[in-house]
Length: 106
Image (cartoon, rainbow, N blue to C red; front, side):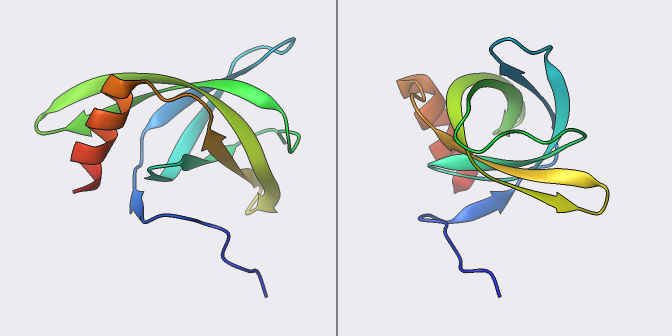
């Protein structure tokens, strides 16, 4: 049985995103859910736990779309239905990104 590691409320977010790890080609992923401190994505390739990456995704907020770009660290990576479920913790979400995320989470 897995222990719940999340520190905050999560909300479903189903959009395409891009993960950029230094030294590797950008990977297109699908988001699963998001919270104030991180995001879960489904990746076709495994991502090493502890690695830092740049995440880019669009967040639908109040009828418009906000582009988010945030440095994040992979906290887990598990095989799930042929893809890899990867959790990322945000490292330096901008003030505007935090504001938009807070609006999305309402």
